Length: 124
Image (cartoon, rainbow, N blue to C red):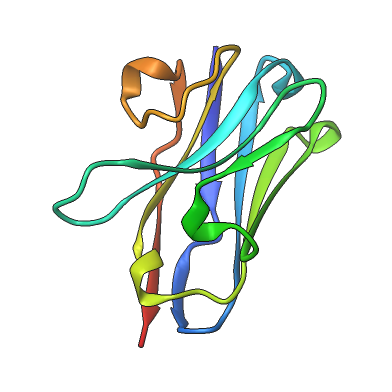
């Protein structure tokens, strides 16, 4: 079992930055791919970014490329999402997920472990 906990969300003005953290407890985080997803009110959960186990190769949705950076510190069992140049449309609840598989789908069944989410609000 892996337990995930997100932190770092908050209220920020457009153009600002936030760094989200996803801390894992339980099994070694290094054995899992980790993804960040977000869900805005009335919308489906969508893929944001992912970082792969072993290689730390990354993947991003086009809308955040060049603005967001995902990274991992396996020694701290933590994955980060650095978000710069934030826009009002980035407002959502952000979730991290972990699994040995990989999918861009935000469906809960595609990732074995999910955190509870952290709210990010970007004001214009």
